[in-house]
Length: 356
Image (cartoon, rainbow, N blue to C red; front, side, top):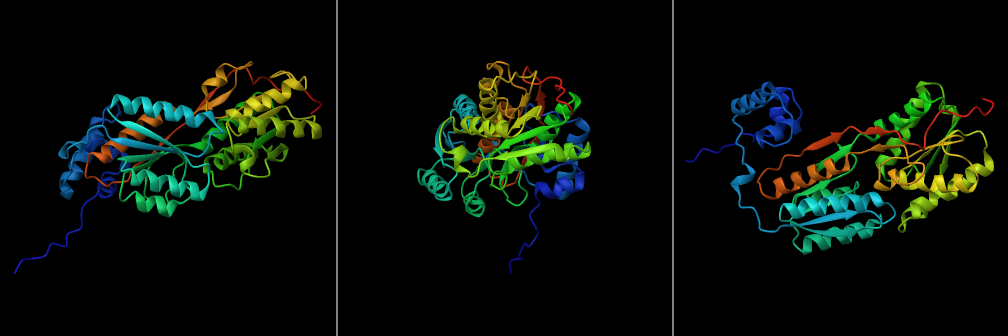
């Protein structure tokens, strides 16, 4: 009689626990990923632990890579140039690796999202990159068991999907610390509804608020929100228009604000337009900050202080992760998080004394 083998399959999670390093580090070592700085000591420790556990690694070269694979890029709206920048980077990098790309706009609608991913799968694409956290998490997670999917957005431990994220909470901290160090004490945060599904915008705000609380300034923060999600997300340029409209409303109610933080650079561009039309000097009267480091941010006057999210690096990492999974039998989940970088430009300066 044949003896059954019930031995549990060893995964990179087991190796990570034994070696005391992250799961992503284990995957990078086992896949011999180029461009990743890992010490020889760590590399040896991971490989020794893998051998001791009897881990059998199926490398990307163990399967035949499909010629000219097709990758779907799913984004939420045309309202922010950020998604176009990501699409351009992914398309360019994919082309270098012999891949084709298909772009799909979900309009941040539940039905639109489901229809787009179902259409992509029906077209037999080889992998999908999401530029945001999907609304239908359970549905997308189930599809990820059929086709490789990578999320290029906030890390979410509740779903088992490969993710390349950014520390958005730290982004908010960086902006707030910069403004406080410049002497600002009265702030406004201009945004779409913070109760929405977009995790990154809430974390940006929470990073700002947490830093202000640390300095005893949280009571000096005015929050200006669009009433509805679609007020800022329906069409190209609408986020800038929302920033513009909310700033006009703010100026009609308050004259003591010395620093305005936009949800992103598109909002900040609209904020700057409203301030310029009101004859308010930037940054002499009011400083302005954004997030994303869009290419436009360095071309407006004054150029915009913002937070760089290392978008080219993250897009390339997401694409590499996707291609690795389309050409290998591995099913390990990898979650990578990048740290943001503050970019100080002409739109911020010392706070003007407004009798505070």
